[in-house]
Amino acid sequence: MNLILAIVLIIVVAAAVGGMAFFLGINHRKKIAEAEIGSAESEAKRIVNDAMKTAEAKKKETILEGKDEVHRFRNESEKEIADRRREVQRQERRVQAKEENLAKKRENLDVKEENIAKKQKAAEKELEEAETVKKSQFEMLERISGYTKDQAKEYLLQQLDDELVHEKASKILEYEQQLKDESDKKARNIISLAIQRCAADHVAEATVSVVPLPNDEMKGRIIGREGRNIRTIETLTGVDLIIDDTPEAITVSCFEPVRREIARVALEKLVSDGRIHPARIEEMVDKARREVEATIKHEGERAVIDASVNGIHPELIKLLGRLRYRTSYGQNVLNHSLEVSYVSGMIASELGLNPTIAKRAGLLHDIGKALDHEMEGSHIELGVEVARKYKESDAVIHAIAAHHGDVEAKTVVACIVQAADAISAARPGARRENLENYIKRLQKLEEVASSFEGVENCYAIQAGREVRIMVKPEIVNDDRMVLLAREICQKIESDLDYPGQIKVNIIRENRAIEYAK
Image 1 (cartoon, rainbow, N blue to C red):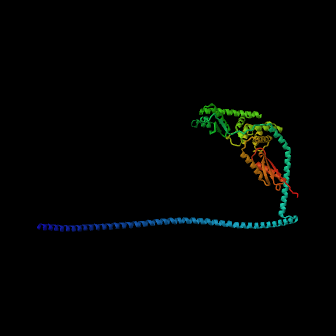
Image 2: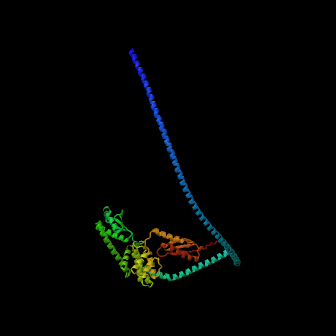
Image 3: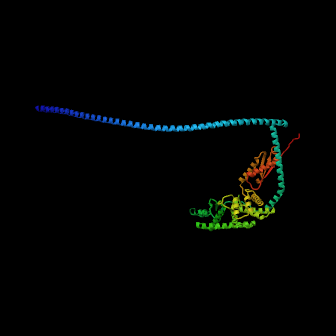
């Protein structure tokens, strides 16, 4: 029992001591914390004071810098304003000077306007006086003649027009009748004799060369492995080979007929030989070129011999041979030149002239067509140039220059060549013309004739060689018919292109119908 009390007492004492120690520790910690808080507050106050001092210094410094900047801006602004003020003053002085000049000019203009107004008033007064005199004279003339001014003017113009129409129609009929009486019989005789004596074949030549093949297998051999053979042919000859579904045939296409002929001959030789490879192709093309050049020379010599023309330069003979491979509207140019030469010689003979120059000019009149695109100019300009180069006579050169009417024909030989050229081109079948162009030409001819006042109907006949025109008799009288025919001919000549000549036939009919009852 005592032991238990002692233990309890010890525990109570220990608890009391522990509680006291606890309270003492808390007080100690509290004092330490209060001391630390006090030191922190003093440090904070010190930092705040330092910051306030620094801020105050910065504020003063910033205020000073701002004042300096404002002072600087003020100085610059005042300087700029002063400069602008000086510029404005200068502009004001210039404007003032211009205003003074304008004022002076305005004063001068006012003076001039016053002078002009005075002169205008004087002129108007004089004009009124002249009009008054003129009016009184017209009134006096009207009283004397019994016509008003408009009636007299219309009467005079009508009389003058009638007299002029009658005079022109009479003169034209007189001259035309005289010319017809003198020239129709002789011209028909000469032309008919020349045409009858010159018989020529006229078959329009094809412009596409076709090379026949023994079989379709040959097409593959001509093409070659990966197309090397056909490329070699096209490169060496300058043509295009068209290999399509056409059986046993190859088409050679080229605008230059001599190159097309060389390619055709070379292909025929390759097909005949059977050995087709690049080396053989080059050999055959070279051989074909020599053959075609020999043919050109031979054809030129044959043309000179057939035309009985001597002393032509060898280069001109070669150019004549090249015409063998030229066509114009499907007509072979060499055959055309030979025919013009024949007809020119015959017409010259019928006229009692020396046919030699006429035949020579007719043979060479289209020589310019033998020159290729390397030389610029029309075939007439090139023909004149090459004829002059090889020392042809002035008569031949002039006939070449004038055979299409580009130059006025001043010699009989030039006129003969013009006529012979038209005769050769106008023969039926000489030149190819498709149906569409033919119909368009006839329609254009009828449209030109119908465009004149008083024409009732018109019809193109004789393949466009004649146009018959029915006119309204109440509008077109007999005298006007002659002038109308002349005007229609001039319109056709200026608007249409045609070989030969076109006859304009005007028909005027008056009918009087009555019924007996």
